[in-house]
Length: 394
Image (cartoon, rainbow, N blue to C red; front, side, top):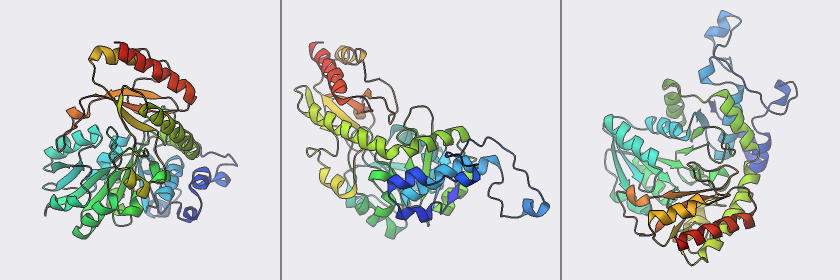
């Protein structure tokens, strides 16, 4: 794990940070990329070295040059005090949660939260005596009516990864901070390139690095970064829990991060064009993309985000399962699978109405989550147009 990594790089642009931060070519015999350091044991030359604190690495689980290369980049981008790595996004989330809560505490989770986060809080934290309550993602400053003397955390996911509500993070943070309540944000959709939660009042930010950071659908990965107040607890919990990302996956994350800005720019434009095209299709009842002027949270999005992600949802007029199967089974370019963020496009049926507890999902239509990859946009439109025709005809 790395604290205060990349501090000097913060004056540079995100693109320059992504390209240069975390690389130490003079220590790698001139090679551009930090190689994969596989190892558990670190040898010390003297007893003084063993007992001292000057060694940069002490054991494989606590970090090596491969992991530090990634920590340095993320810390600089997030403007954080430090970053820890995890073997998956959920592992990063659970580690961050455990660094905040104790038995008897109360936490507030947005009702649009990623379902595995929801289940971890309700089941695992529930067994530990932590109470989880869910709130309307559009509650904003109204969160003040829900907090009590036991509330220790407000968890924000903005936008939600199925229904794409944008949350008023500054308003929530303004309520939480004076009360000593931590604010944690899942920022996987926008990444620190387009949204910086720590500068808007959040304390901890987490990422499913499997998605945009990796970018190639070939590794599982997660990150958690914290401000100066929460960094000591996050780093300590990470170490005590034995959480670590493999050097090979860290290498793949570093590889993906180098092209993150270019990939996000291209995928953002393709996603917006497809979303606008879908809005004009007769079968489409609604497109849930916060960068669209039709989105109810568009003003919040414009205020707090500098760009949009590759993921959005659409709601089609309701039809039976046979129509959904006809639509999806014939897709040629859009794959059907979990996760997102890779170079390949995906289309997945989702059911927010089965998950929510604090707010009711009002639509009676069929909801599909779409991730737009790097294929030609006209080819993606043709594939989706044929899919909509099959849906209409079924």
